[in-house]
Image 1 (spheres, helix red, strand yellow):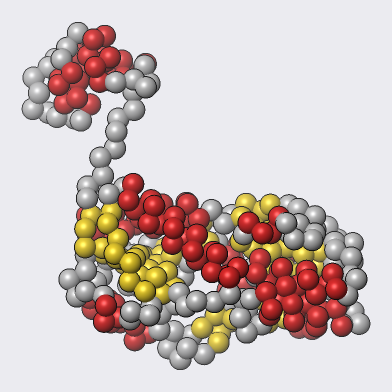
Image 2 (image 1 turned 90 degrees about the vertical axis):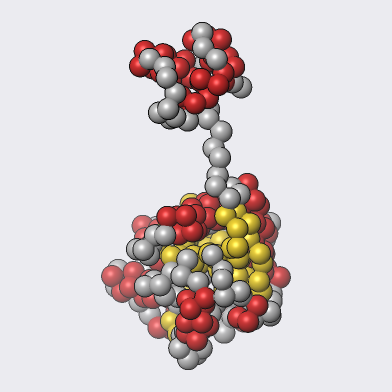
Length: 327
């Protein structure tokens, strides 16, 4: 790896001079010719300047996720581990505060936070009173107040429907769950169902009988949906599924009923959890890049904490379809 010392030896100046020039120190007395030579040499030998991240303290990771099913928890746990690992590398100290600890555990002098999980309107208002510098991951509960980074679920489902239509499918179904209203806490339509309805209607293949909405995103709920699908006289030939957790349950039910996948019914899902490649048949699914999501969230956090950003931002992170044998 190229060093400051090597650049100094080639140009014929001190290491201190090279360091100050590369850090754009206008106070150093060197000629423009020497300055240009230092930058040219650094580029030629492949010198990469070490990034020094300003330390951000008094920040928190609000882990507002209730314990659910193991496969569902894997997604949130992966975000949890990745975010804390990345934060440490970029000099951001995050104190973890959980939903079980409650809003009272959040200090009133908090500098900035990253939040994962669902909050109601009252909690969001309390949070904003304590701290304006916030970034939500996976949801955007109030885009007027807080930044957010989300996987582009709307696009994923649209691409699924496009794919199935291109393959000649006319009977396309959807398996998903519900979202929750921030004011009432009651179930509301999830963005994935909304996107499916819009896309299917566009192609003229929207059929209410082919939409299966579950109470939770669990394997068991997916299994029950799969049983209902298998019992239909005219079941769909393709399924868009809102998450791998649901899809794994669907596959179990269809396999039990002896329904051939993908010959009789193709299945396309979202998340790409590790087990997706080992189920029968291996699951075609959209891969969500969790490291990119966490990196984007920490970039927004840094901008909020250091630059007092006033305009809120929402970042949608696209995914990559991983094609396996389920379609």
